[in-house]
Length: 352
Image 1 (cartoon, rainbow, N blue to C red):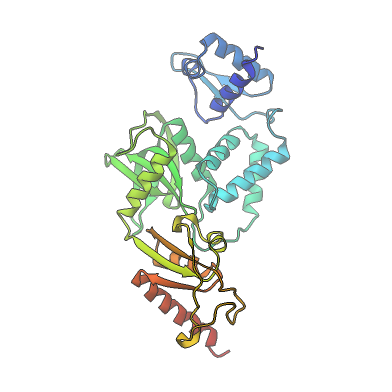
Image 2: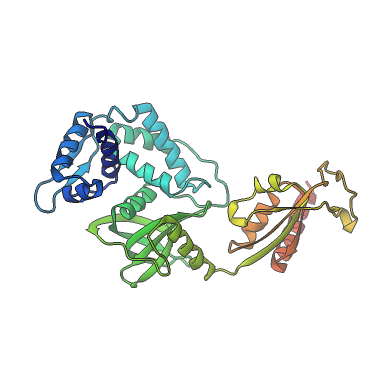
């Protein structure tokens, strides 16, 4: 092997791990080598234990398939099962930090898992009851991996979709990207029947099926190079047009670092503010230092940002910060917190 061969083999392997069939000419163009070099590299991968299948004919190509055993240079059985279970659990509940790259990794891993390991992964997941976070939606990881694989492989999708009002429809789309908001997953796609771009909540998608028909991705309206951040910007604009924007102005009786660590990034970043007395019961101001709950009020921060989340979810996230706070706006959030506080007070004071 030459010095460049190992790096080229790794790049070739990364392409083949995308669940699609790659024509030899396209691989040669991507790696800037000749088709003959691609054939030699495929033989080297097979010698290393990677099960690469080839199909003949003008439309033929190469595909990495599931084998009788995991390729030796990658993972052993226990590591593969542990990673697949972890990725499935995180992807299925849209946990913050599990982004599209993690779902693509899960799609690649499940593509090459032998049947005996796929059965172990499914058994472990089915026997585990997750602790729901209460502010997200459960998703079948197989739905996510099917959508991710179709978007990466540029393959048209069919699926059933349920609207917010409960209406069931059949859709055929050209999937563009998956977008995670931390609480939910969305699919940005071009709807072929409606001849327009749409965003779909993945927890409302069922029976996804990759048709095998390839497509050339269309440019997103108002975006450029087809990057993940383009899809995120398009999604943000799309959602902003559907839901009213909340302009938050909240003061916390805690340092900015403390609050930022307990708020989702989508709500913005708090900035340090000067100390301010915290109002006690019936409007009585507590002195600087500590309030009756033992919290330090000597430092404070302020959150001024905009979001399109629901009032209920924003109120919940503010309460979970676990410190005193005062909402200056918007008025509808102040009113909702008042009603929520009264309801919680009645619940706590109810006779037992």
